[in-house]
Length: 304
Image (cartoon, rainbow, N blue to C red; front, top):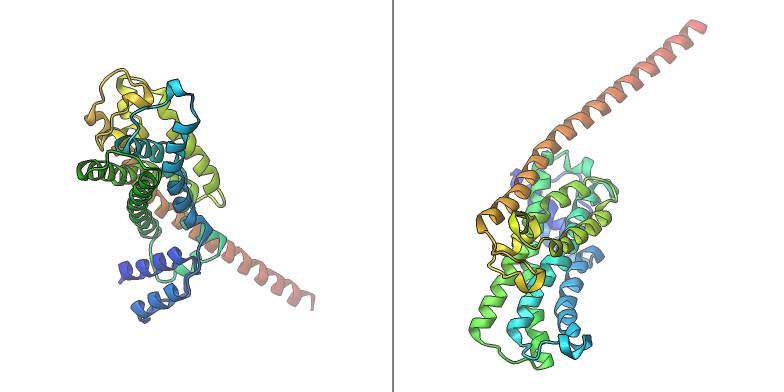
């Protein structure tokens, strides 16, 4: 039952509608249908669509504006797919995922719906975990969307070299890189999503962290740094892009991404303690308020 209720709230999140106060006894399927029927586009959810549509355009456009000596004369579909994998993981996906994920969590505070969700009841870790799961699904969908936009861009500008093998290999890397990048971004989503209005700052930090891949040229750091590890796990060769001087180590890449996942799990567990502390503070505040009212009532009686 709790899982179903969490899904209902996630459905409301997707379409940008406020969550209901109490869902017990409701027809969940009908509720979801009604929310989707009333759906309106949410600007923050469109960020990923716009960003990933820009990536192949920017990558191909860079070939047109650079000087002839730096231009790739054999630029084809294979090169475009590689450029998109790199651009998505370095810049566009970290910004989009942290902004969207942070907003999904932050809106419960800014829209004052968190107190309604807590009446279901759904624990804070489960609610945050469900929202993270939603962002993970969005990451995969954004990856598939990016494959489609890359294909359309290449066909539109007349690139050569499109084969079934190139499409499958490049498309698979784009989707898998979206998933591994999401795993790396999970702690940022949780941290900045729970700080009211901070998800924009979190997306800026994600940009800098992704861009910092360029500074790790070799050694252990080049493989264990989370964002470069996200690329290594999908079999991407960074030597041409980051100028790495040594071969990557998949085991270190697993450790790098694993650290971020473990960090996210710890943040989820800690969110339960935060909720309990907040509830105790509110209970203490109410108790003090009641005692103050009683004292005032007693003082007025004495004066009479």
